[in-house]
Image (cartoon, rainbow, N blue to C red; front, top):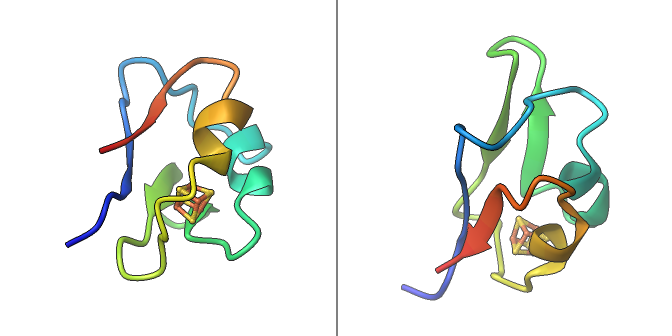
Length: 63
Ligand code: SF4
């Protein structure tokens, strides 16, 4: 399995306006309104790292 984004929820502020979610053009990282949290769809994620750079809280890593 390739590298995938993962979220550190101790750092993530879990808001609908998540910048990392906006940076993910394929919506593999997204704000889930039902769960009220940021989620990663590991099947979609390509490990490109755009979300890592975009997150102002350094909450996303690709590993
Ligand atoms: S690593 Fe790329 S594809 Fe995966 S969630 Fe982040 S921006 Fe989306």
